[in-house]
Amino acid sequence: MGPPPPRSEDRHRLGAWPEKRAFGRHPVERCRPIAIRRLNGEGHPCGRWFLADIVDVAEGGMGLIANEEQTLGMGQWILLDLHSHPDFGVQRLRARLRWISQAHFALTFGVAFASPLRELPVLSVERRSLLRDPNEEEWALEEERMGGGAARTL
Image (cartoon, rainbow, N blue to C red; front, side, top):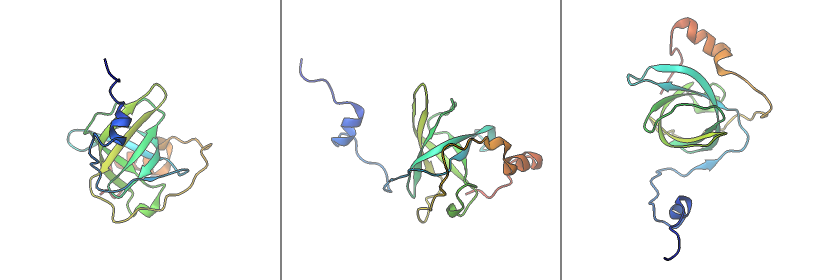
C-alpha cells in the first residue's frame, strides 16, 4: 500500500508546490486590526465592514484572520481600510483574495494588493482586549453620510 501522500503543508515544505510569492512575508505580532469590506463585480463597496487581524505582511500582500463568519470567494476584490496604520500612506487599498481557509472559529485568508507597496509599513500597536465595530467609527459614519467611498484609495 505504501505511505500516505504528504499533507498540503508538507508538500509545500518539500517543494512539491513552487513558491509563487514575489515578496517575502514578514510575521506580525500585535497590531491594530484593519477593517475590510467586500467589493461587488463593478468594484463598488457592498455589505458591512468587518475586522481582521494582520498575520503577516509583504510589499505585495498580507495574510489576515477574522473571527466573524464572512462570505468571501476566491479572486474576489476587497477594500482594506488602513486608517489604523498611517504608515501605509493611504487610507484605503484594494486587494484580491488569493487563498482562504474557513474553520468553525476563524476565517484565515491571504490577499494580493492591487499595487505593491514601495516599502513595508510600520504597523500601529494595539492591546487585543479592545473591541470595536468599524461601522460605528467616525470615518465610517461620515462615509455613509457622504454616500460611499470618500477616502483615498489605491
